[in-house]
Length: 141
Image (cartoon, rainbow, N blue to C red):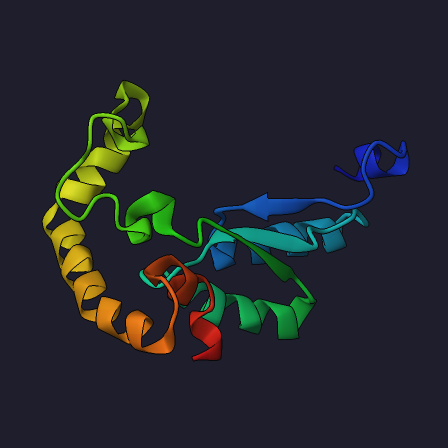
């Protein structure tokens, strides 16, 4: 990556879905060999996936300055509410290439998540917003 940056093909580089240990190792190796370390981690972050961004990445930020960019604020559509009654045929999760998402939705954990969303719906309604709006803005609540 140092070569790519030095050639002007990129300004920085980061990781995506790496563990904190892998990021720290990449940083250490880059420093050891006088190379450019990663500057950010792209991590999944939503109501059901919070630990990495809220616990692990702040520690990396304070130790080595690695920032975070997040993705999937609606948990691949799970928080949108469209999977509350199973997987509709017209949804992304019904496609063959998204079998992993369908399995995630119909799993026991997926059913627990849907129940949690049902519990959150009245709260969103009381706040005058939709469940997806609440999910994206939950840090301010």
